[in-house]
Image (cartoon, rainbow, N blue to C red; front, side, top):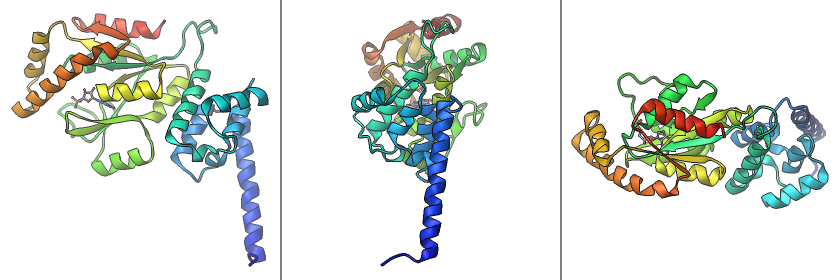
Length: 297
Ligand code: 5GP
C-alpha cells in the first residue's frame, strides 16, 4: 500500500532536510569549525541528531588532508564497514574511532606549539594524597584540565558540587551509564559509584590541552583500554606506615570503612607494576611538579 501523498511529501522533505544538515556538519569539520571527535561524541549521545546518521567514511573524509584512499585504509584499520553510521557503532568500534580522531587532532611534538596534549591518569592507594596532588595541579596549572568526576557518594563537609565532584543520585548515574557519557566508571570500596564524564575530556584534548584524571585503579585500567596512549602514574606513599597514618589520621571514615580501605590499599599497591610511572608523594609540590613534567614531554 502506498502512503498518502502528504506523508510522502513530508517524508521526502524531512530526508532533504536531514541531508542538508549532514552536509553542514561535514562542512564544519572540513573548515575546522568543529572537531571530528566532538561530532562523534554528539552522535553517540543522541540518535536523533543529524550527526548520528552521518557515515563514518563521510566524517573521516571531511577531515582536511584525508582523501578517499587514506579514508578507505583508515576504515579498514579501524575495522569499521563503509556503510556504518556514527550512531550505529559498537562500543569497541566507537572507542577505536574516537581514539584515532583524538590522536590525529592532538598537536604533535614539533608542530610549533612545543608540546602535545596528553591524558594522564593519577592513581594509587587510598589516602596516598592523590586528591591533594591533583588539587595542587588544578590550582597552579590552569593549562591542565582536572577532570571532575560524577559520584553517587554524598558530599563531605567543604565539598562543592561541580568542583569536587558532580554529586548525583543512583538514577542519574544509571542514566549517564546508559547514555555512554562516561569514559570509565567503577564502584569504589564496594560502596559508591564514580565515573569520568567523557565530553569535557574530549573537548580539552581536541583543543590541545592536557587532561588529568584522579581515579581508582579499576578506572585507570579502563582508560588504558580506551586510550592506550594515556600515561598512567602511580602515586606511592613514602612508606606503608605513613600510608596507614594518613588513612587513619583523616578520621572521616568509620572503623569498618577504614579496614575496607586498608584492604583495597594493599591490593592497589601490588598493582604498581602495571603503571608507566611511579611518583613518591613525600612533598605535594614536588610530586605535582613531577606529574606535570610528564605532560610536557
Ligand atoms: P573519595 O570518595 O575519597 O573522594 O574517593 C574515593 C576513590 O574514588 C578515590 O580513590 C578516587 O581516586 C576514586 N575516584 C574518584 N573519581 C573517580 C572516577 O571518576 N572514576 C574512578 N574509577 N574512580 C574515581
